[in-house]
Length: 171
Image (cartoon, rainbow, N blue to C red; front, side, top):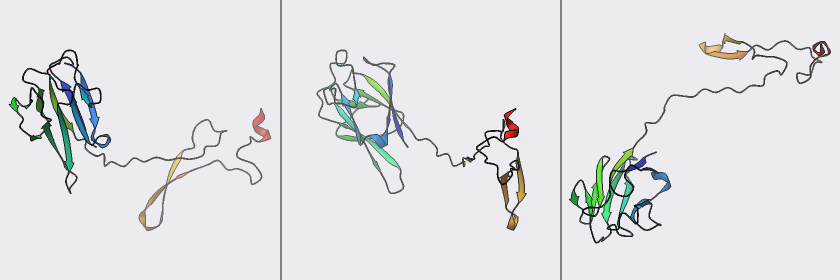
């Protein structure tokens, strides 16, 4: 699952980092308005419009996402890597976005975690409460050369309930 990381490098929120999982958003609106996803400091970054710009993404048939940045007709402009955005431009991981010529700037990063393809093996079993440690594991060969893991349990008499200690255990 891709995550968008916004790290403010200047402006009222310099030093702050925010993480946005792309599966929880369809786009990210940038601005001073409290309804924006990526908000700047409204008092310190007054040159930023209430709804200044938007970051959007689309996924192709192969599952790859591409990102874009659109200026929303802001008064002071939107800049990608120092160049003013006219309309919509492609946005890539590592690009710098500035809201206004002298406004706050942030580093846009997309984190694409590698899927963990290593299997996780878990085992659930019922352990006799009378045993202080789990019984030992033994390996036995099964048909067709496959190996299975089996638990060796202490023998119980046919009349003994495994949930109840025997009378001999009451000492």
